[in-house]
Image (cartoon, rainbow, N blue to C red; front, top):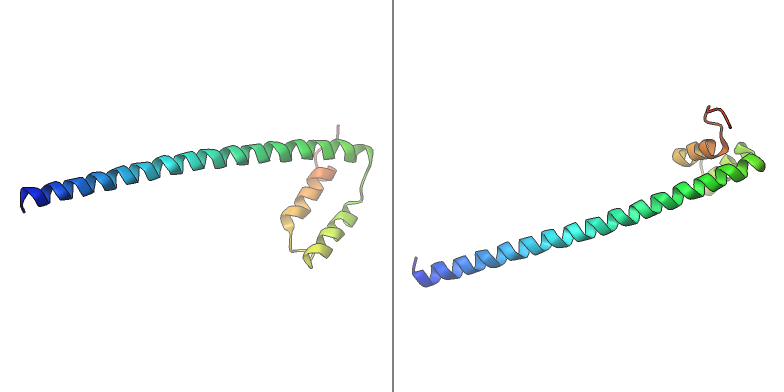
Amino acid sequence: MSDFMMSQVQGLLAKVSDDVEKMGETTTAQTDMLLGAINDLAANMFATQAILCVLLRDHPVDPAKVKGWIAAQTGSPDEAPKAQGIVDMLLGFDGKKKN
């Protein structure tokens, strides 16, 4: 292989290396931004749950009616088990002693 062709290959390899490095930096930045957004969303949900729990202690809600609403929206009582569990958690029927 001639020196000219070798220098061309080295140049292309250097360009590919730079492109891969830039892709890594972009991915890292996007991941950091996404993790920050998830953290903000989790904090918002936690604060919302806290407010609901305090309000629901003063203004009780029938969990069967809430779960019935969820079942009506999803078309099946077994369709949203996580939502059903969160209802129990928010309404304090998860077996924990209320304060």
